Image 1 (tube, rainbow, N blue to C red):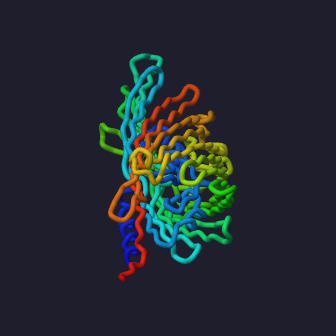
Image 2 (cartoon, helix red, strand yellow; image 1 turned 90 degrees about the horizontal axis):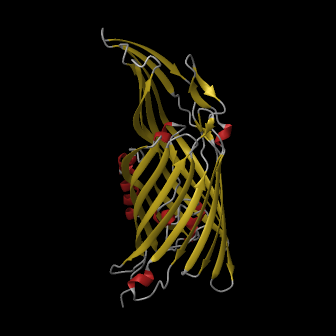
Length: 424
């Protein structure tokens, strides 16, 4: 138990490492930023598939019902980081950007018979961008320069548990402390005047998030299993008061005028539904497919119309994400190293959850390949080094096009902490 508590304290102490942006996309200026899933090392190699994935030797926060599959002797720690390079293209102009950092830290163990418990830290959204645009006015002697920047995001510190009610059926939940902040700014200046107008948007969020999951794992014959998974995360108000600050500066006399607008209880997260199905053959092969739906269209979002800062409907839209993925292990117990590696592949498609100037945001197409490499120590080879590469393409009509190449690296430590040694 002391080791479990030490692991939880270690996870809590790393919260500052996650208080950073893992994106540099201009699209993160909309809504709550670029949303993340709750995938870990093995999921990422299959492009985020996980709602129906169930295996006692791995941690799967994408469906908390999976926690009940952990055996009574194991203590699993999983941690990951990623780095990415993105190429942006608009009107035949190309630029590149890099970002990266820690993704998650999680742990899983069996607390009681048929009950698994997990805890950890994961991101919910990322905001990070900085760019400018210049517009020539008709008189050709005046230019208007707009500078855009933003940073922040939301993070979740969760505790979850699952119960295997009867042999094929498990239910589980995650309860998370959801926190973070964001700052966005737009400043406008002209080459012909000395006044600068800035709009600064900010919010400080401290709330909660709940995830509920169910898995039904049915054996088909001797070595085949079919699993159906369902998840639900209820939407609710974040009880945050977002603000908009207008600042007019006159550089010649070093004077500024500030007007502050605040919306009481102005931010929310939506109802989220997930459905997944997976098939596995022994420890050799498994394949799965997920559908995730988020009801952002039901949520009003803060908007400044030039005079007032109020909640407005129609800025967000329901989003859909489809993922498929597979894993193949030639011979898990082979003496040959290459036959023990877990080979993974996946692909996905997602729709945006926001509008840009009344038009749909960017559609997303993605694909991934990955490997689960066994780490051999003095006790077992159940621990894994998970490495995956992912390509993500986002584009919309007459808007910025993004191509992101991401490398994910994760370590899964699966150790027998609770074994009782017998001396004869």
